[in-house]
Length: 306
Image (tube, rainbow, N blue to C red; front, side, top):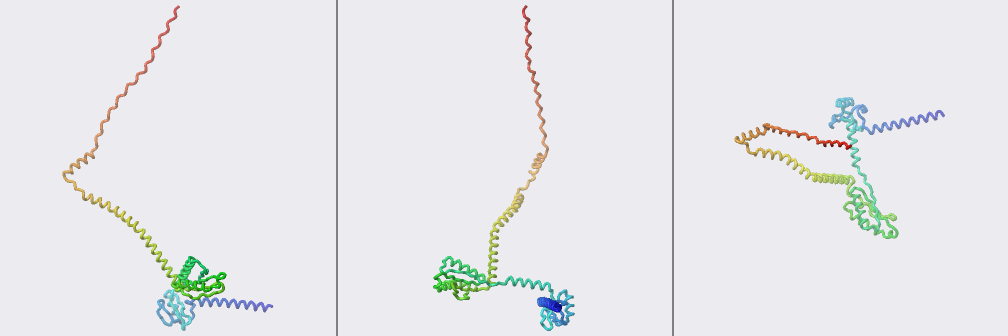
């Protein structure tokens, strides 16, 4: 029992070490070896500008990398001897990541869009769905057009085939028939492929958007131009007014010698202080009103007769 447990632990540790080793090997394979990780006696050295230095010992290559403040990167490990290049490895990884991101951004996956028709479709609905098909094809996608038969319509497959071929002829400017009309049960389908690749279609759409944006910007500038012209005219008028005043002042007649003394006397008179008028005498105070006359006392009553 103890021996079985020990063997099981040994097996688990073996698989763990093997997995670690595989991860290490994977990391070594995914990323190139640099500097001291390059363990070969000599390398074919390439300079930072792409110039061929030749076969040198690894010690000399590392010394040159240290003196140049660069990294020694193994770019072709399977060559004999391996090829190593002097470069800034951090900058190299950054540029590689940017290129990979741009490649993913420009990568276009073609999709298959599906559009369904009825055998007795109205003309307006037909034109609307045909417009959607053209839009998909311009975008670089494939379109699967399907006609659905109902009831007795299944006995007239030629009508569905004529409708599909009519659509294919009308969109021949944008698509090519990849799969001829094929009936499967109650449905008959036709596959249309775009004439342009998805990447080309996306590039054209991007250019069209940029052109539309530029046209809108030009239209805005055209609307702003009259306002700017009016503002410039107002500023020009404001600048011109002082110039006209200066010109009028220069064109005014000069003062003669005869007129000068008169003008000087006028100025002196205006400057001289004017005499103040004598204050008017205040009117005399009115006499006080006489006291109101009191009524005379009545005579005393005569004595009564005896």
